[in-house]
Length: 100
Image 1 (cartoon, rainbow, N blue to C red):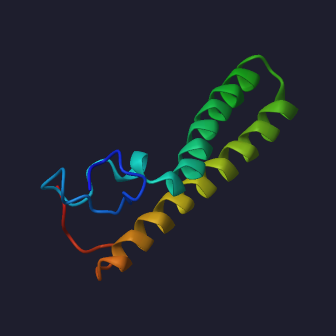
Image 2 (cartoon, rainbow, N blue to C red):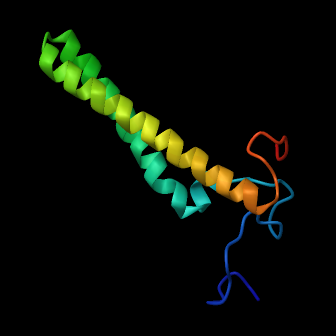
């Protein structure tokens, strides 16, 4: 089967196109996207927090600071959970050295 076949399924690691075990895992695996989005949103909220604090809006700085922390922690946990799911599927632990 070729890559354009409707029956082609994406699996990790993609041994057909790479010799490394997890190249592009975070971007290719759509289950990581919510976590990556939350981390990006957390970075934007960090910038908003710093801006609000710099202009003296203490209330907004606290609100955006809390939201920043929640988004960053949730995003990192989602990405780590998905990475762990992939490693368990390969029979490995999250801390087992492999790949790069």
